[in-house]
Length: 175
Length: 184
Image 1 (spheres, chains in turn purple, green):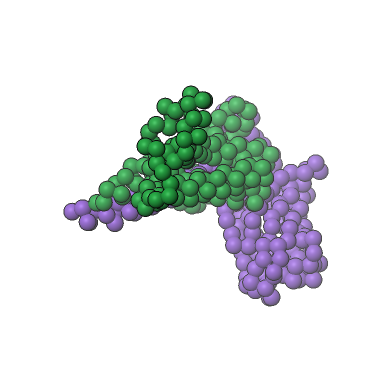
Image 2: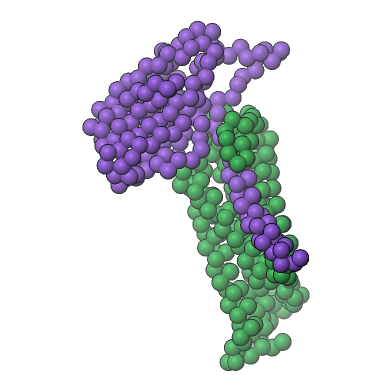
């Protein structure tokens, strides 16, 4: 009986180390634009475009953050780490149009130096190009329907292996 | 089931609980103390999908840093206490000068018995290492202050050093060094 219990006990011991580690990682707070409940009946009367960080981990993206600058623009920042030649994709932002009308949102993504990678966005199954391998950036404008949510995916395609990390930034402007 | 495994299971429960409690209490205490706006949601899929959301980046880094520090203190202080106590007890056994110092500072009673075994120190040190790895990784990702990462790094090095020292003491007990004389 004791011998049969041993593997279970070993598993339990491993879980005693694994579960607290995962629990602690999950307890780490995340930045998010919290809903402002201004109506006493609990109805959101906010008339904003909300940009939330999706977060999580990815092999080539780290240090993701999103914040609003003094000009009222949202800035998404992340570090693109060294990578092998491949196509990478990650959900990075959730856009929410809480207004009652359609709104346009412009994205301008840049790295400090040419990345030799094609960087783009996928929103609602539609692909957009943000930066060419030469480092040339393009502004992307997307229409957000009223009272709707959109997940924004960042895509990075490197034809050759990249051996250095680079800071990447997307400026998000509501027009 | 072996006695070692039973003992390891029993000894792992307290640091495991303290690790989660240190982080959770740290996060909640800071939110309450600084009256921060927060929300608990389950928008992200994962092993545990519940997440704590804060309204701005600065608050998130502040809460994450100090709660990581709380978790490190809760695990690190008892670990270092056990290591120091075991080391002093061993030193007192081999060196009459240490005994004299203990008497001088009136702490002889403190080291007359050793309740911390190598297994206990090993388990606690492992939890300190796990907590340190999480904290250093947060610092490197810009999700907590750099100095908290440095504290975690130093604490993990101290724990590893203490663990090695305790291991030496344990092996000396099994294979005693003939040249050293024990006064007990």
